[in-house]
Length: 260
Ligand code: NAD
Image 1 (tube, rainbow, N blue to C red):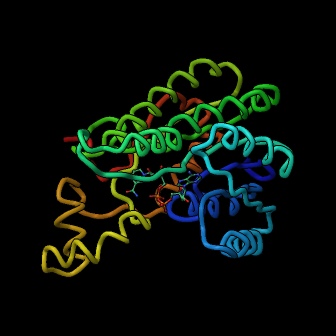
Image 2: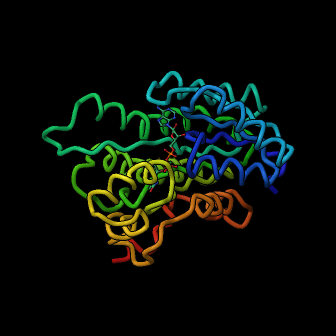
């Protein structure tokens, strides 16, 4: 069913976005990937994905903190692929500081990448989806879209905002064959986490594996980090025919974190 559909996946030069780009490509979707990466890496990723799956793979370097680029990436995907049938709004980053010391520019940057860009890209992609009577929008929220923890005000505000925006969009397009859902990952093994492990292991005088359990997974009932491929599997499911009546919801992929 997904064969021949065109998917735009923001924040997909690494982590769960990249895993999802590969998974959708393996389902037969043409994909546009996006995100920051060292020179040469995006071209290598495009080649790898397309030679493995045989689909068309394009890259956009759009900086989604800029509204005009969040709009243009959709126009570029439509021009390059022919349409945007699936929009996975996934780009994101973290910044940690107490609110009284939280730099204003970090607040603006994080909320523009993780909330404002979702609005701009969705607004640009919806008319085509509505006119074709089919579309899938999936937004990456987080466990921090429904609960909070200290020192992450911008991230938590953006991820809560995305959860609300998801419901608002879902209601507006419910009769048009377009679904809009959020995913709520818990701790997922991507660069953001992997980069912090050596320092945490040093601080706690333990192995990186122990640091992962002690520091990052202490509140996770499964005590296991989520693999990016598990996130990709959920996104592919949400794009499928079987999920056509699932809209306006947030699927938690969090090892039970928010069940407490
Ligand atoms: P990641 O760092 O591997 O991926 C983030 C992607 O976003 C990268 O491709 C990066 O280049 C891109 N990006 C960042 N700023 C951008 C900008 N201004 N414009 C365009 N692209 C930009 O990390 P990940 O864990 O795969 O993160 C993907 C999403 O999942 C994010 O929204 C993140 O908040 C969310 N998330 C992650 C976890 C986790 O534990 N890893 C948990 C819950 C939610």
